Image (cartoon, rainbow, N blue to C red; front, side, top):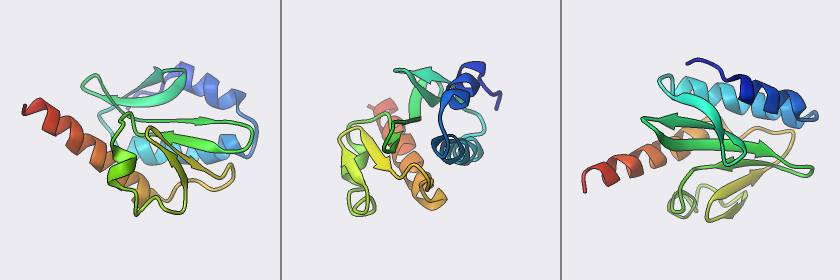
Length: 121
């Protein structure tokens, strides 16, 4: 994976502890998606596979956010996300505690499966 200067700049602008938390998330996503393209999508760092958004993330003053680039992934994994605040398109988590790598893997896998299903229609 080639890193993105825009993503580097986004993370450099983040305050601590958000920067460290999101840097950890970025590394997890890069390991899960080695063929992905990294860039900015909808104003947030994101990973795309074959032009399709798979995962995005960002920071705010009181929380960090994971964006599954889908309106159905959070509902599909609702039981596993019960400890987090979720919306149809985002998962909020603590500024100083990255999402567990196994949860990120399930989120990524769910999105990749959704993309695969849409290709077969």
